[in-house]
Amino acid sequence: MLQQILRDMYIDPELLAELNEEQKQILFYKMREEQLRRWKEREEKARMEEAVLRKTAGRKQSNGKHVQWLRGKDGEVWVWVMGEAPGDKPYEQISEELIAERARQQAQKEAEELWRQKEAEITKKFRDAMAQEKARIVAEKWKIEIEDRKAAKLEEEKIQEELKKREEEERQKGEEQIRQQEEIRAKELYLSLKQAQQHSQHSDDDQEWEEQLRRSKAADEERSHKARRARDEYRRQSLRAIQKGRVAGLSNLFQGTSLNNVQEIKLNDGSGSPLLSLSAASSNIWERPSRPFSRDVIIRWFKEEQIPRRAGFERNTSRIARWFHGIISRQEAEELLMNKSEGAFLVRVSEKIWGYALSYRQQSGFKHFLVDASGDFYSFLGVDPNRHATLTDLIDFHKEEIITSSGGELLLEPCGQQKNPPDYSPLFE
Image 1: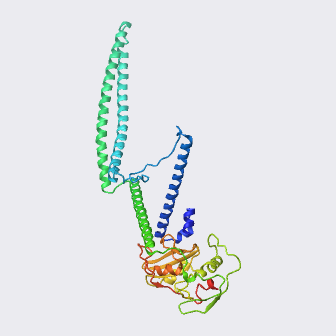
Image 2 (image 1 turned 90 degrees about the horizontal axis):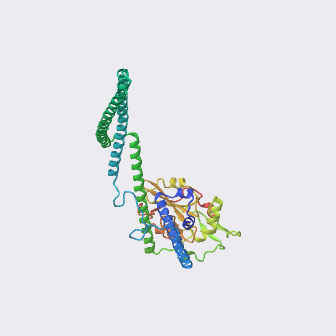
Image 3 (image 1 turned 180 degrees about the vertical axis):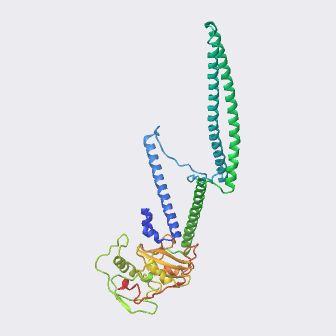
């Protein structure tokens, strides 16, 4: 199942919902590893093809284009995370600069408005003065003889020149006053915004922006923490698998078992049940679908593939293990474990994958782990890299070894049947 997920780089949403958070993180970590492996493989293939093309062409194309990743000192692709690289500004400095820039823009806007008002006043003042002076000249000078009109014109131009000069001086003086007011206002606004920030009295937009920034940073930290924990758990399980020497391979206990043999299986419900006779396998050739889609198909799969591998049996006996259950739902499993102590567990046939689900009672609730049985071994999907020859081997192994380092789950107390006949009866009929 895991190999199929990594091959397709896709997991069914219903199957994903069956995984707990830690299983999801480890599975995504493995998928990311597979993505990197494929990318490196493509890069190596492209590099070799490029080398062959250069060798055959004899020279590099002058207009050739290519992409080359920037690499760090360790030879890996260089990745920059904002806020963590040397020279990146801290959040407090960025906030300080944003406040200063907002204060400057606000003061500039107010200064521009003041200047427009001042300029309108100056223009109106001197336009009115010029009109009045011109009216006076027309009234007094233009009544004289024609020979005096030239002198009157010169006098008018002189007065206009003087008025323009005075207008320019007053305009410059007004600009200087506005500039000084702008500087003073910018400082006032800066202090006001800074004080508002210190007393947490931001506007609605500022509060929303800061809340989004806080949530984003918290989410980044949570994702980094989960990714690190998933990598550590994966490495720990890998080292443990090497140390324990648990590899795939069917146990010698059932090498002589054959689908053509008639077996007598005792259904164990905790108090003992009658032996049921198991007939030979169906003459129809069994071809397993890509995924289970009905209870009948799951029962057929169990009879064809799992009974010959002694799935659900106690070691070296013909009795069904106390912890084994049939096709029951997650809710039914939790109801069976409800009044049990921490460490109680059961194994039920999964309806999502070709395998099982281990339901575990912890102090604060329940956990469910998927067990992949689609190959010739049994292993937890996305959690434990150990491969076990039989389902009983997996259960016995985790009676002594924890399932995850973060949860510390040990299988202590098997949870038996509460129904008669037991819920696994359809699997052995």
